[in-house]
Amino acid sequence: MQMMPKSFLYISILFFCSLLAGSCTSNDRLLYGSWQYIGLESPHQNPPEVTPEAEVKEANASITFAKDGTFTILWADTVLSKGTFKVESDLIRITEQLPGNKTRSFPFIIKKLDETTLVFETARRDAVRVTAVRKAG
Image (cartoon, rainbow, N blue to C red; front, side):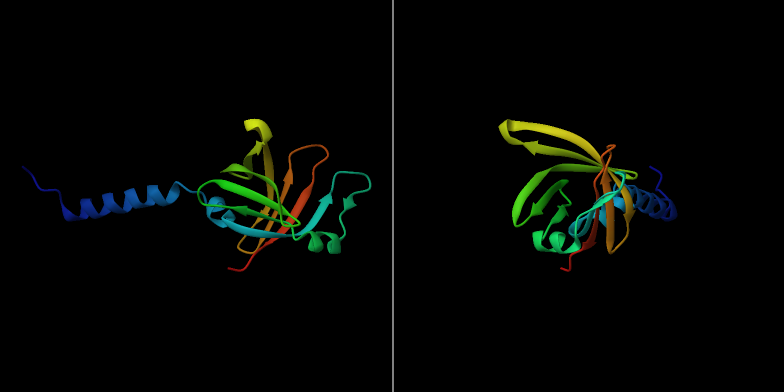
């Protein structure tokens, strides 16, 4: 039986590790965690509607994306929406759990995502755009 050269073995291990690491997109990794809403607007209305910053702050609204593929949206300490999500390029595909064991699926378009800021909007003509900052911790 012929032995495999060590260099081939190391390259194979590195390749396998890179495949595992690549199974999550960079958007997935950046998205995980809790995001505090700081702005809400309807940018495509004429004139655009903007929810006052004080109202958004008072609502203590946030969205959390967990590594297990679940999300939760809170508004005034109440669960407004929950379900599962999947990131595909610049989309967050949401499957929301509804009463009566029903679901509703729709995409959020990622407008901006980095270590500190997330901007996303619903993919509808009457889109709502959310600006959020990463919560500490």
